[in-house]
Amino acid sequence: MTNKFYNKLSFRLIISISLILLINLAIFAFYTLTELEKELVKSSAQNSYNLSDVIKRSTRYSMLLNRRYDVHQIVNTIGHEPGIEKVRIYNKQGMIIFSSDTTEVLTQVDMTAEACIVCHVNNRKVSFVPEKDRIRIFKNDEGEKLMGLINPINNEKDCSNAACHAHSSSQEILGVLDVVVSMKNVESVIQSNNQRIITNTLLISGIISLFVWMFITFLVNKPLKRISSGMEEIGKGNLDYRINVHSHNELGSMASRFNEMSKRLDLAYREIREWSETLNEKVNEKTEELKKIYQQIIQIEKLASLGKLSATVAHELNNPLEGILTYSKLITKKLSKSQKDDEHTKIIQYLTLISDESARCGRIVKDLLLFSHRDDEAFITENIVAVVDKSLLLINHHLEINNIKLVRNYSEECVTLQCDAQKLQQALICLLINAIEAMNSSGTICIEIRKENRKAILRVKDTGSGISEKDLPHIFEPFYTTKKDMKGTGLGLAVAYGIIEQHKGTIQVESTSPEGTVFKIILPIQ
Image 1 (spheres, rainbow, N blue to C red):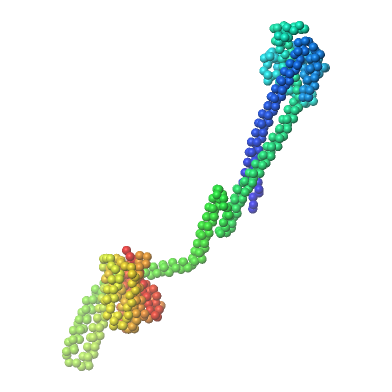
Image 2: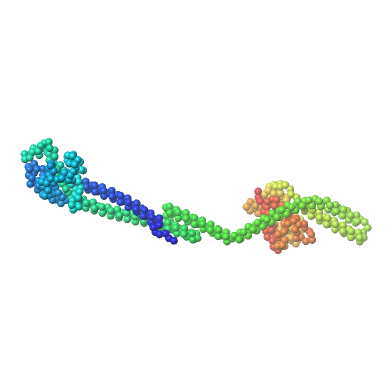
């Protein structure tokens, strides 16, 4: 649900800036208008003073000659000029002796009137009244604003020495000139300026607010809207969405970080999806690995247990078997020298069978001793190529007898490792003998040596008949043999497995088929 426009941050920001601007401009306008009014009033007062001095100078000569009519005409003429409301002259007793309003002439004024209160109420002489207190602003009956200004008429020497009406020289003030001017023009100017300043203030506020709105809309609001749209798209699952903001300010940096974040989220989501899609395969792979490890652990435990048992059984059976073999051969030899008949011949056959079987049991005991024998590790640095070549030299006559072709495929890189060379030779000889016996008097054996990731890789390939699926899981188990006519004890591959395991390596059937078998040995290079 979209937010209302007045809840948006940009709207509130525009309103706040506009209000702050309007308040500041209003304060400035008020201060300007106040100062303008003061200056206009001051200017009007100065003009009134100037006018008052002009009247005093204009009437001075006529007053010295006591030409009252001339004074009256001057006052009347000036008093009816535009902008002048009234001109009056008071004597020292407060009587109006001259006025532009003839109805006021020879009337006594109230001492509390505007023209008199500043002096008589406070018992001050008008000559000592500050100029700012000589001005009064008031309204007439029609509500028009007026400015009155009193100007003292001092007793000059010419006045006190005049022949017509001499005044005492001790008298300072002869009277007061009161000039009342209209403030209509001043009010008009102030009102006009008020309207102009208020209009300009509102106009400037509107223009600045418009620019603020454009700035926020195009440089802030639109990028924020794009970022908000991007967040909504990401929330909907559209992780490929990118924000198209190319500015170099904070919002542009935010958009760039957002695009990086969405890119990483997209990559993480793809990885999670791939994991979820291939989870079953990975679980199966890990299960197979665990099964292999478990089988290896079981195989090691079997070999360890069987090794202890084999060592004990082998030592206990070796001596009795040796005695049986020795005495059976001795009896056979003695009977062979005596007179032969059918009965002797059968006995000799039986004794020969006993000797052969005793010898075969001896070989089994010997294999058991080899299987159970565990010397302390005495590893030295050896070149694996030298170990393999020595093993091949020991079985070379078997290769020649069975017409087997040997192929060496060695890596050019020297492959050395810490090992027990004799035991490795024993394991290799076991694999090579099995390969020879798997081929019917002809074929090829290939020995391959490689170095991969700090590991020595050795492969023994033959062109025999392969290993059947039912035999493949059991070939490294002790006493398990596929050889017919009881020719094997089933301990060869078990012994080889134990030797490779002692070297922290692994041995496995890499591939097998009716065209041949490949055994792979992996030994760590330490």
